[in-house]
Image (tube, rainbow, N blue to C red; front, side):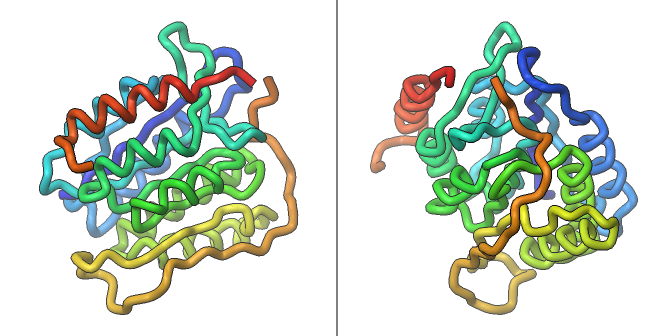
Length: 241
């Protein structure tokens, strides 16, 4: 069974998003899908740095997982998590990439459903085979529609690339003019049976800017040792901007 780790972050000092709706829609389409017995959703609300790293640490060596982050991104190309008081904590692309490097055998796909997250996707893709990010601001409605359609296709047995294209088409079908905002960086896993071809890493990169709303305005050592180093890098990278 593949785990879908859903991390939701909406700090009290940021504009409020319909993360509850997004989570419920994903849960519903997977429960209704023909592959429902192949997925297990693990949800973390008001996610902090320690929630992210602890949840990844709980993955067994032989487990496979999808990581889905939904929340805010900034124009400075950082993801917004929460601190212990529920306020914003910014995470750099480099720190995130270092963390995912430690779990590249378990994590197959990362979806960053947040504004301006393509830079983080690019960094994470050094280690993770499929990463989806947004090349600019994305509206709440578009983000929810895209995520729902992506998991709808995944639950029907489609691979990550086809699920991505299905989700972008869903935006067009609904008349939401943001289908060029989501971008995928993709290369097939050699141990993934649903992928038939070997391709070069894919980056679709042509986009007119749409409307804005989902943006904030304000190793050769054991994994545990590497994780401690990555955690230190993460904390050093947090700066209010």
